[in-house]
Image (tube, one colour):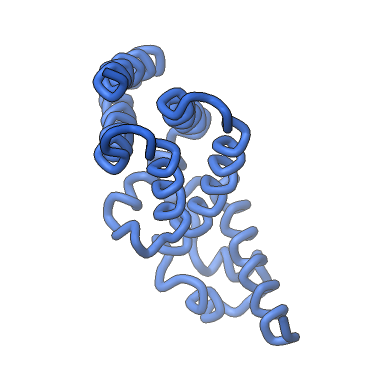
Length: 183
């Protein structure tokens, strides 16, 4: 990698780090691109080298963080039965959601408004889940079903606000999927 690429990578890392720090202190929706540029020590226009707008920047930054966490989680669960790995993965997703409802909820809201094909970490993660499920009859359909159960659990929580009930609903739904896939 040349000096120009090194500098570009350094600036990108500074922008992403500044974005993450601001999200943690102010919340997803309160962050402005001007604040990110100031904290990262770059010109405002530099941000647009890495993201077309605030939503895209937030999606990339949050997506990279989630992909790293969940990639490590999936690596650590190797050797477990496929359905249990996927169910544990989504249970960890709920744990993270409940730990930071506002920011994770904002991330998922943005993700629903933008094509996921623009975010390689989301595409990669869903491909990994399909790979784990490849021994089942229809891994693509099953991955979509699990993803749908998780999404519905998050939406239920937004309306009901009860973590215990949300987890119970998700686990009951996943148990039905598990029986259907195993059966």
